[in-house]
Image (cartoon, rainbow, N blue to C red; front, top):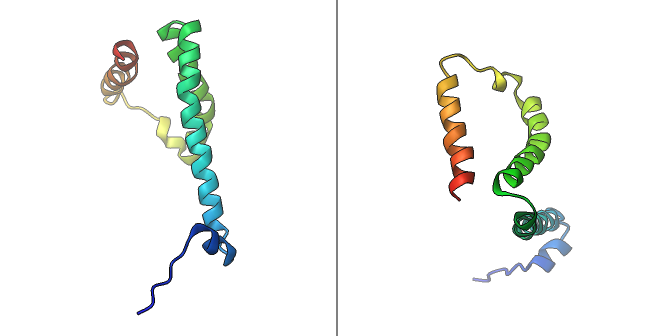
Length: 101
């Protein structure tokens, strides 16, 4: 019984460029994630904790809100019954996390 051994180079040479795209995406994710730790360390010396968290969440909001709005416009419809739970989740998940950690 013969077992074919595929290495990334032989697999890409056989016409499958999707593996190359996958590795490119993985490198970009690792670079941006690793860069976050470095930039957080630099920002922590410049800003206070709440200011840095506010800037970080504002930047994320600018990028993620349009994507969420495009996916589902009904996502932002909140009933009065959901409001207390939403406030509790926002307080514990955002405020408390940034305050204590």
